[in-house]
Length: 104
Image (cartoon, rainbow, N blue to C red; front, side):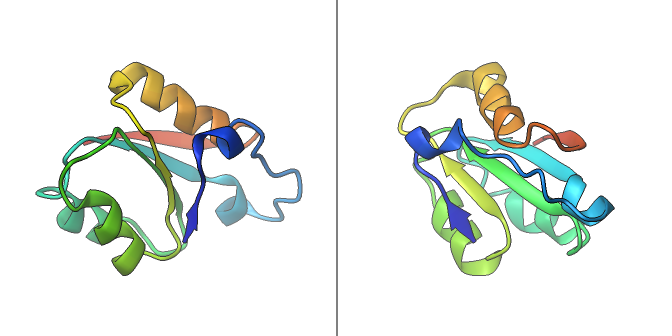
């Protein structure tokens, strides 16, 4: 699991992707999404890389992801950016890669 602070997030992207699994990312925005995360994450194939932008959740979203899904990249925000801005954070992190946005 890779956890990046906000200053590290804007400079991250990969040019060395070797196959589709390295190129595909799901960008997921959460805010107090603990109720839905277990089932949502269970439906994502392990080969697909996931970037979760957490909008300063007050529940156990971030600890749950860190403990149970070490391959997930969590971009924890210090404030709730709203869905649009948080999505842009995730897409900026994943730039240069194919990506899908998961609404949950």
